[in-house]
Image (tube, rainbow, N blue to C red):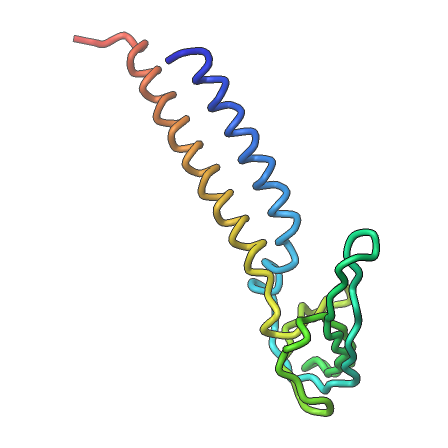
Length: 152
């Protein structure tokens, strides 16, 4: 195998590893919601539209900020805020499903507001790292088999 091919493969491995680490950091919170999250029904305290500005104050877009409150099964009262698209189905004063992580450092968000793109990037990068690892393992085994003395 040529030196250029090996260098190109090493670059791809490093890029994949960097994307894996970055997407892992970005999607960590969402992974915690999926693994350790709990569901609850929350009361909508307030819902209001905000305008998020684009770069240099241009191209702003509307978002809906929802403030909600709920009580954990252990009796702890929690409040939270989530920002969603303006067409989010919501009725003020109604109950909305939320997903939260318990504990003092816990977080909460509206139940259907998941970051699937971050999780997808993490999954693809995990798959690419796995493929690189398996191919590296196979090549290492082939090299050690070729070099090992064979007994008669």
